[in-house]
Amino acid sequence: MPNYPTLNQMGIKSVDNVQKYTLRQQGDTDVLKIYYKRPKGSFLARTKKFSFVRGRAALPIEVRHSKAFDNMAKISPQLVLALQELKQLDATRQEAVQVDPKQKFLSDLDHLEKVMTAKMDEIRRQIKELD
Image 1 (cartoon, rainbow, N blue to C red):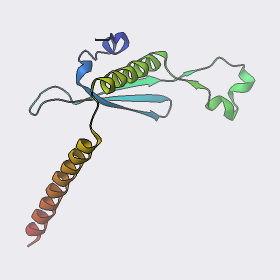
Image 2: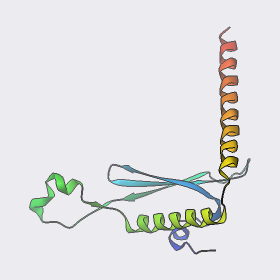
Image 3: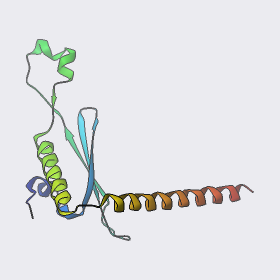
Image 4: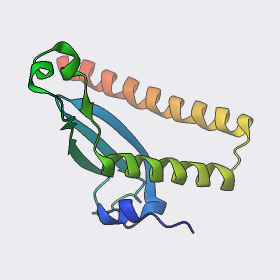
């Protein structure tokens, strides 16, 4: 199994349970959110959020007030390393599991059916409560 030192340093010890991740920017901060697959009834967190403040490039004072300076924020080196390890983790998983496209479509269809049924039941319940 590959080693993920940056993820381990961030407190992500069970890399096998990482399901997906998202990255968004909030002002001058990058927010990395890690989603875990957990068994039903687990008390462990399903997500972990990490914030990385963007650093500024060292520029002369006369340039700092220009619009170009606003776009020169540097991404955190730790975030870059974490993203590389997460991509490596995804690549390792994809090599290990080759999903049959037909099975994936059937699985997606089953999931959609469950979601739709649950939503329809919820709406019917809400209608009955109006009476």
